[in-house]
Image (cartoon, rainbow, N blue to C red; front, side, top):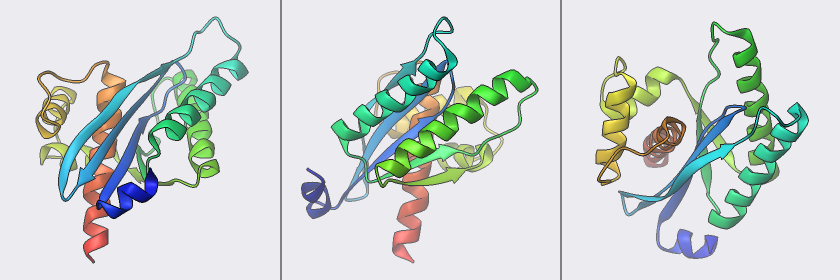
Length: 171
């Protein structure tokens, strides 16, 4: 399948929005400079499960998604410092698991600041979450905004990586 993608000049990008409770994912294809939605969703873990089981579920589910859809590259938002230290720790741990999973699958991951993602998707770094969701919908030709928010954020990360990597390929 991956050889077919390369022959047809297809770049498949996995966007990820890591979190301990919800890890959003979104996959897009770039086919001859046109963007196409492949799939999106969330990996959900239960607070009732042990911490290690939650992290293992993120790894296992993401690994299955990678094995099924075979992305070439990935894009993810850089880690930001949240006001809630407990929440930030969970995001950091989920992010570590995601980074390990990508590395184990040989997938290069671009990291982008929130402002880079907003700028790439909406044209302005000061965009709010609603505008980002609306622009993701428009760019992917969808009838409504992707839900939940974590999936929409992941798709925005994939679109951003696609935009940045296509610029780099032209240099």
